[in-house]
Image (cartoon, rainbow, N blue to C red; front, side):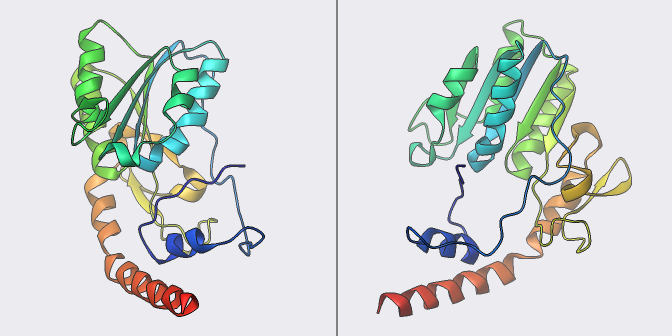
Length: 222
């Protein structure tokens, strides 16, 4: 099993500090409901950043079922590029985008999606996984072209059973929990603005956790 993460806070710093032979106390998954991929003939999979780690197995399963798969993956820069060869192996067409143009095509994933549709591609479904702001605009692009979209939501999760309420979302005017009802939801129904606002609530705590982790790791080095 491969575990892919980006160092952004205290927890991921601690994960990155683990040495061969060390372990974590618990590893729980999979959570929620499986992505529905049956019966689809042509799909565009759009991944952003570490969200590509989740997008890959979906693209791979679609490919194995005989579906035509077009993949669009986006990163801030070449240094953050992951899984390119793996996506090539399961995609009939792959577009790599970077914000700064250091690799692939300079620009955002929605520009590539626009180009694919303009080239005459019509998709049964667009599946997108990545930062909330990216998914919001992928959905808007799909709406512009009359395409159905599914988004894989990744809010803060604590227990993964729906009890803590940390992963609460509003979908179609109803409260849903990403860990049990998701992570996949109809992109047209997700309240992205609320989800992004909820995500900012935890930033002060994340900053303190990162500082504490830095201090702890520095002490261990000394």
